[in-house]
Image 1: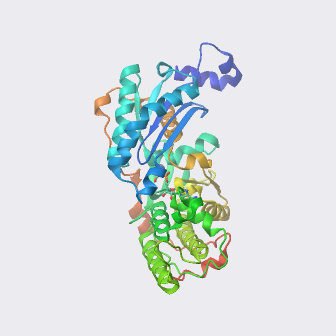
Image 2: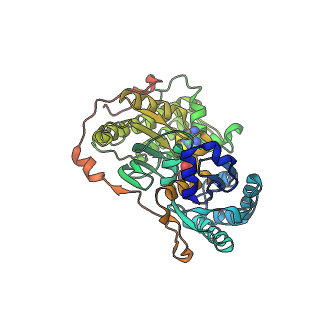
Length: 414
Ligand code: KG4
Ligand code: ZN
């Protein structure tokens, strides 16, 4: 059926719509790798037929972070309902599905288990093939659903659990150029926002840390007021580190609290400036590592357009994305990101990744359900980390696009 559809598509799009015999491939995507229960139904053209997302954010912010057994309980309690709503939204029945994509790696094992078990249940009951999905590969390809981004492209994946630079050759070929040595940027934003007690501001009460920091930074008067280090400044590779920025932030907050006599249920006066400095430091680090990756991959692009895709929850950040778009421009490249509703975890990206894989090679569809297993940790692609380190590319840094004042706050000179 898929071949038929593709052939028809090549001939005439209208013909496909009018033909009663030919219909598009319909794929379900199930995402439960962390604290979002997301299920979506897509057709092979990337039309979203149904999309339901149940976030546990409100629950977890009350406890200051994700408690894996509770996340599992909440996934279990809601997944069937999320599925029902998704099918209703799509006005379809499960027997009309062509495949079921499900996140099997990496993620919180207890959370992954719920999605994988549910996917197997649906697959068995309605006799559908399963497509196991790598969560970060799904983030990486998501922007292709809405925009025409040809392979290859450079991709910066920035989320609550990861920070990675990959060169994406095809739907299944990923070359890893850099990764975080410690924290992920979203994790750093979340922990710093919590330490800063931004949740005391009603507006930010249920927001994630990154979103709160971005919003608070908009009202900064002096983004250079607080100092932040530039991590790995002397390491000529594409790896990341956010632990230094985080620890430095904790020290700065403690010092400001002491100086101002901030009560345990209070926030330092200049938190706007603090957030702006933090944002500038994270953005500068991301820019520098991405610039080296661009330099490293220029020969790999050949004559192809040099696209830079930014994805993952932190890609929601306009300040960071604008800096990266500015960097891309400097290299005659163009920066893309998925629309905001698809930057963070969701079922759409899982269904889309399954579609990309099926289009690439139908053997990704699995009928041996019992052999499909989950993995809390899973490498992304083939490692080129040593090659990047060996190349030791020296860069003349492209300046940030705005808020230059904050750059002077960086302790380490470039
Ligand atoms: O991709 P995602 O939804 O989940 C993971 O796979 O980790 O990313 C969640 C992360 C959180 O750490 C959150 O703080 C961050 O994305 N995030 C942001 C923004 N919105 C979400 N970080 C910076 N700026 C934002 N606007
Ligand atoms: Zn994610």
